[in-house]
Image 1 (spheres, rainbow, N blue to C red):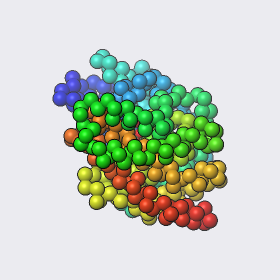
Image 2: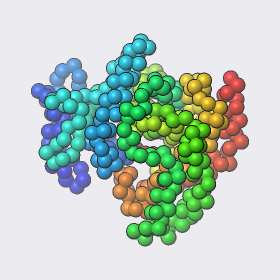
Image 3: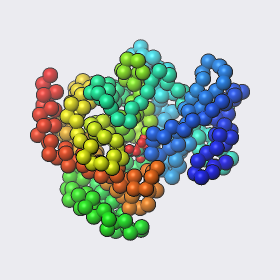
Image 4: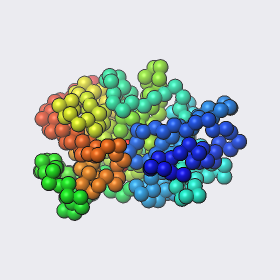
Length: 373
Ligand code: GN1
Ligand code: MG
């Protein structure tokens, strides 16, 4: 059963058994990385496969888990075919779903919670914060390659599981609504943060207006290209695969570039309370952009290429508005581990936005240089 919002071992073992019939479950360890789903590493006693990843799907965020899992099955099967054609190692390079005893990829527990499992990629790791430019170069090429692998995927097959996910205009309006609602009276204490956000209303519409006007192409994109969503080989440091495919949906390539920059170029943690530590590292920016552009420069339109630095700023801003709105509404979307964490997260994002505004000429120069090389 669930106690104190946590899951007991007995409870988790019952869930894990469904994905490992006949096997003895030795341990289930929580992984604290994501803000949405609950992730666990299941360890088994005997057999060739020693562990796998198990997740409880957050069905407050993913309100149609069946569609979510259908999308994920279609995408991973498609990626398997593409990687096989290209002679790659599918078991390492593609996220692989582990089926439940009944053959399904989604398991509903007697208490109604929803569970799924994935193969554990051995000898690979994820990082919350990069420590050298090479990691960002690898992440850039992994997300760029992911984009290429999916370039012919039939987008109409995918259900938009979270509509308007990266519609910054809609995110901005949601923040305005949260400020108006102010259910916990938190708005007054964060007036400076609110002012920062509201002053950027015009910027918030730019990308969506261009998408609506079909001046930017819709592609199948990852939409959550946070740096911890790339697995790196533990010994070589090279990118192994892209994970967290929940939000693969039609979107703009600018979303994927921008969101990765948002999380990758930050010199501090996403929730660092000391903002003096939060800076944009230009070397990191350059490394990610180089990896990403090597893969995608020829398939991008001129307008897409031109907007990459702007998209980096906007995706950072959008994420900040989401954290701030959630803080105002009482932390109902992003999981927190301490009070005020979503406010700290919002502030780091806004600090990065302010830095990117000041660094705009530099970011443009890097972009130009990379296009020439
Ligand atoms: C959430 O759970 P995680 O960390 O993979 C969120 C992303 C945000 C990110 C911010 C479905 O991703 O959009 O960019 O937090 N995912 C969803 O850290 O909302
Ligand atoms: Mg994730």
